[in-house]
Image 1 (spheres, helix red, strand yellow):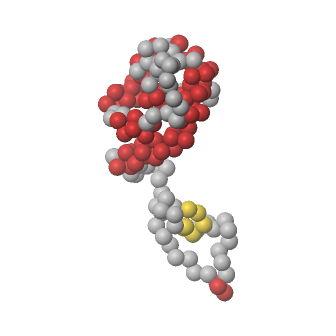
Image 2 (cartoon, rainbow, N blue to C red):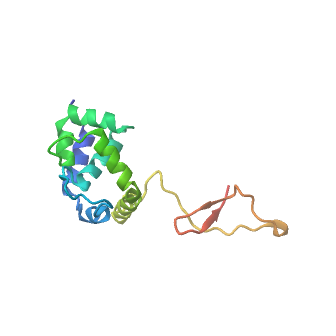
Image 3 (cartoon, helix red, strand yellow):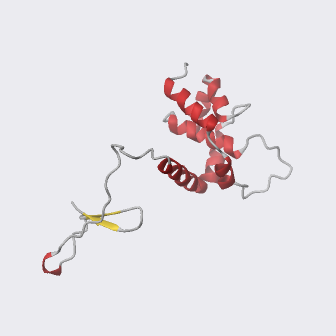
Length: 155
């Protein structure tokens, strides 16, 4: 399996990215590791889930197979050996509540870098006052939510 150009760009991004804030978000586990070896760092297992999302893989068993097929993926995740699908599933179960915080952090980083400016997926969220006839309330399908908890009105 050859490396695609997009994967090489993603790999270059990963190598230059500052992982310290995400490492701090992941922090320590809620469970004691006394008496057990630490085979995988949480940050490296998180990178496997970035890879899983990039490869559009649905389950951890398929992800493990892809890690066996392409050793560049191991380097991408900074892993010396391939984790089992049970290890990945356990990590996902334990740390899934922190994934939202991590993705919000990454969204803020991308927004500060102006990645979303002039993007086809972005839209104007300006407040527009809507006059109502006879003091009727708007139909429930005529509004939406904005990121700052306000509502916008429209079609």
